[in-house]
Length: 321
Image (tube, rainbow, N blue to C red; front, top):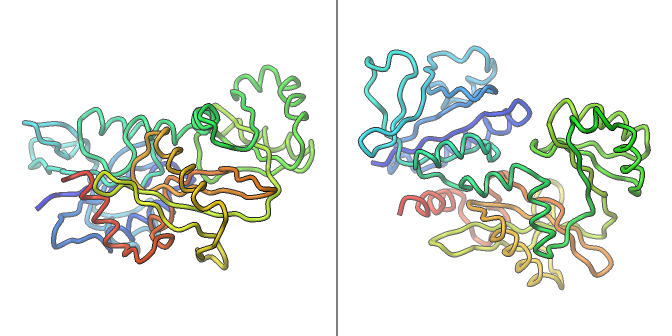
């Protein structure tokens, strides 16, 4: 029986979503076929295991989860093993065959597993790096003629030293615009005027070392498409729109172009696993506005007749077979 480590937690902003999705993954994975080890990552990138991590009720007081052991990964006799960090010689090594991350593509963690040679579901080092940095990602997309919103960026340290010059450059944008940390998901401030910009930038520079400023677009429709690899072939979902918190299939004249565009983005960024691509459509033009690294339930609801448990099995088999 293969052993799969579900890796979750990570940065403080995305911790709760990561925990919820890790428990959901644990509940739906085929436990008659795989042995599951839950591996929790705290905000300082320390790793822990323990049986209580499998129960969502344990996280009501996340600071006091009982029975946790701090662990570390290493390679031993061509096997990838999990060792108790303290008391090494009192513990039998736990072999891990595959890591299933639910951690928002933490580049440092994923690159460490890649370095050891541990198989990983989803992005490898290069894809994780490009997903983790919105600026590098956008530069590559733009260089490959994939339509994205206009943007600029700056270093936080640069802002502290050249505040007036950077604010003057931002003033060249038309409002509204969004200000985001380059390396943190699900954090942005939409600004309608100069005062909003001033407050938002002052806040964002304390969160990240690079800040990106993006022009918010007017649009008629917003649609999404999901892609993942199964048996070395890309599988594309329907074109869907979000209504009442549910994805609904939509008919659009851009269907084939959107699919080709999303596939191109998936390939040029060297992505793996399930990714959701969000587009806005207006005035006979479509623009890629976001690539979601961790869609809820792996975006299975965007696919025709896709079974959630079957998709999980496909993602695992892609790496183990």
